Structures are given as structure tokens and as C-alpha cells.
Image 1 (cartoon, protein in one colour):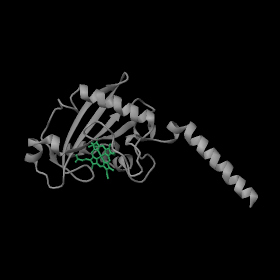
Image 2 (cartoon, rainbow, N blue to C red; image 1 turned 180 degrees about the vertical axis):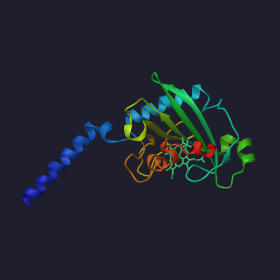
Image 3 (cartoon, rainbow, N blue to C red; image 1 turned 120 degrees about the vertical axis):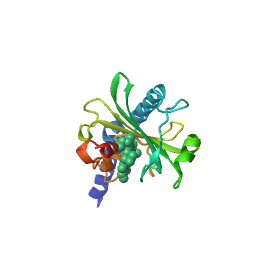
Image 4 (cartoon, protein in one colour; image 1 turned 90 degrees about the vertical axis):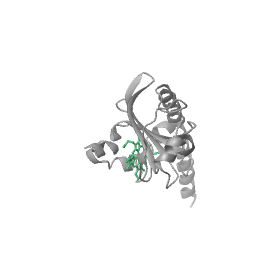
Length: 183
Ligand code: HEC
């Protein structure tokens, strides 16, 4: 009995110490480092008019869950901290039933979220082709999962649901869905 209790205490202390000391290594997303990187990426996206007041527009098209009812998708490149990579920006409009005309007339009112994939430097996440994932709200803050973790980084890596799990099933093995419409 006594021994078990000690084991528990030591185990808990180790788990706690480990999770604090090596937070960034152990948590694939939502850490200060990832949130900070997401803020830098947002600034980079503002400077190329992907987000913010001067954002470029395309004709939105009908979407599917989980990304919203009307979508705009952009393929471009961005530079963060000296690294340039492919940037995929998806603007998600709603609510359900919203029409193309309504979105075109008042895009700001209907924009629900901006989901982003950014190709980072090699080795960032070699298991998943080095994509950085983020889900922003229109004001540039990050959306959160039900546990309150901010959605930036290797989002939900190793979990059965979420950005990486779903996108790893995209045809062609490149984690990208929309390009498949073009083939
Ligand atoms: C349940 C599956 C699923 C989940 C979870 C998911 N996506 Fe997607 N995503 C899709 C599909 C399907 C498309 C293509 C939609 C379309 O027709 O434009 C897409 C498109 C995208 C695109 C445009 C590039 C592409 O693949 O076509 C980005 C960027 C993106 N998602 C980011 C994210 C981020 C960031 C998350 C997590 C916060 C996420 N997605 C979660 C299914 C998913």
C-alpha cells in the first residue's frame, strides 16, 4: 500500500516536471512558440493581402463540413523569419445556407474563420510533410479546441481527428484537398 502510494507521488512529480520542462517538445500545438509563430504568420499574410483590411477577394464557392458553407481558397507563398514556403489560405464563410451574393456583398459579416497551412522548414514535422496548421478568427486571434488549446502548430498530431488526421487522407498524399478538383 505504502509503496503504491509512493509510486504514484513520484510518477506524478515526474509527469509534471516533464510536461513543464519539455512543453514544446511534448505538445505538438498550442504552445507559446507555436502561438507566437502564428502571430508572425498573420503579419506576413497581412503584408501580402491575404488577411486584414486590404484582403484580396475571389468568387466564393460552395463548401462542405468542416470548413464552412462558402469558401475562398488561395495558393501563394509567404516568408516568416527568413523562411519562404507554400501558403494555403482558406476563408470560411457562413452560416449554413448563406448565398454567394450575400457573401460577396458583405464578406466581413459572413467570414467565420481563416484556416491556414504553411509549409515550414524541413524537419519541423517530418511525419506530416512539415505543414504548420492554424485556425484564426477574422481578427487574427486563434480559435481554440474544446480543451481551450489554441489551434496553431502541428494541430492534433497523433490524434484520430483534426487537421492532420483528416488532411492526411487527401488524395495524392500531399495533404491538400482542393487541388484534386483540378485533376
Ligand atoms: C474532417 C476533415 C477536415 C478537417 C478536420 C480539417 N480539414 Fe481542412 N479541408 C478539408 C477538405 C475536405 C478541404 C477541401 C475543401 C474545399 O472543397 O475547398 C479542406 C481544405 C483546407 C485548406 C485548403 C487547402 C486544401 O487542402 O484544399 C486548408 C488551408 C485547410 N483545409 C486547413 C485546415 C486546418 C488548419 C484544419 C484544422 C484546424 C483543417 N483544415 C481541418 C477537410 C478537413
